[in-house]
Image 1 (cartoon, rainbow, N blue to C red):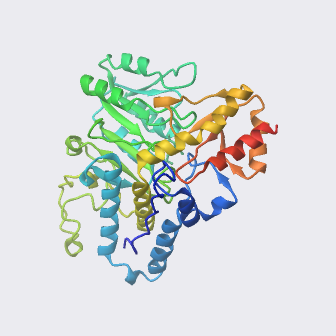
Image 2 (tube, rainbow, N blue to C red):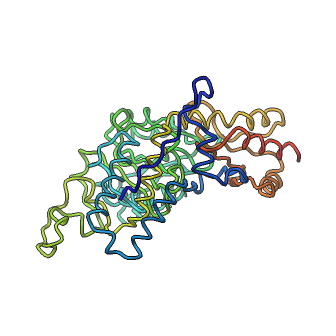
Image 3 (cartoon, rainbow, N blue to C red):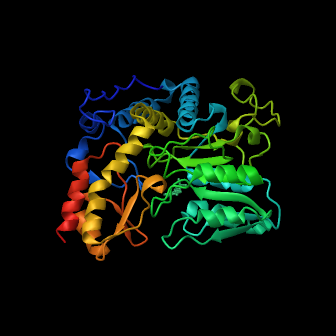
Length: 398
Ligand SMILES: Cc1ncc(COP(=O)(O)O)c(C=O)c1O
C-alpha cells in the first residue's frame, strides 16, 4: 500500500549548498509548478508533492474496484501513518491516534481531560479559533476558558501564562506551537517544565509548527498534541494525528467512540462479540472509518519531509526570510513576527499600504495571505531565495 519506494532527493555535491538537499531537484521533481508560481502560503494549505499525488491516484484507482484494496492493506497504511507521525515528534506509534483534522484532537482533549466545575483552561487571546471553541464549549460543564492578553506585539505573553499556572484552578494550558497570525513559536521547553512542576495539562495545537520546527515530546514532555497534516506536512485534507502521552492514555476515555477503539476488533469474524475493553493504546481515540487514501498520501509526504530533515527545513525557511527582512529595514515596514528562537517559517510584515501590497503580490502570481493586518509569507522546504527576491521586487515597486 505504501506504493513503490519514492526516489530520494539527492544530496548536493560537497561545497555546493549548505542546505543538505538539492533544492533545484526537489522543485523539479516534486513541485514542478514552482517554475511559474511563487507559493508562500504553506500556513494556509501546503501543496501535495508529486509523489503524494501519484500515491493518491494509484490508491483511488484501486479504490474504484475495492476488491483490489484488501483490509490488510488499509491497516498497514494506518500503521505506517502512526509510525511516521510518531517519528516526526519523537513519540511511540502507540501514542498516536489518527484524526481527520486538528480540531478533532483538541475537542477530544477538551472532553476527555478530567476537568471539574470551577476549573480553568488557560489560552492566549489571539489563538486560532480551533484552539478556542472546543474549550469554550466546556462552559456547560462549569469550566471557564480564560483568554490571557497577548503582549504589545500580539505574541503570547509567556511570563503571564506562567504566572497564572500558580493558580490551582488552572488545570489546562492550551497553546499553539506556532501562532497562525505572526509565526511566534512558543518556548515549549519552558512551558513543559512549568506545567510538569504544577501538574497542569499542556495541550498543544501543533499544525503551524510540525514539518518546519523540530519537536521531541521525549525531551519536552506534554500531554496532548493535535496536528492536521494539510499545511506544513504537505498532506491531503482529511489527514492528521494526535499524540497522547503514554501514561495518560488509559486514564482518558473517548467521549465519542469508533467501533475499532476496542480490543479484539481487528478480527472482523467476531465483530458482534462486543466487549467493553477500550484499547490500551491511543487507537482508543480513533474514529474509524478514516479516509484511507488521505493517510496513504500523508505517508508519502511525511517520508519526503523526514528524508529532507526537519532541522534542515527549519534552517532553510529561516534563511529565506532574509531578503524580506532587509527590505523591511530599508523601507521602514513593520515586521510583526519575532526573529531568532521565537521565530518560525511564518514571516508577517505590515507595510503602510498593506492592502495595495497584497493585491500587487497577487497580481504578480505570488501567493500569500493577509492576516490580522499583515502580509503573511510562509515559505517551505521547496521555496528559493529567488522566490523571496521576487516578493521584494514587487514590494519595492510600490
Ligand atoms: C493554529 C491553527 N490551528 C488549527 C487550524 C486548522 O484546524 P483544523 O485542522 O481543525 O481545520 C489552523 C488553520 O487553519 C491553525 O492555524
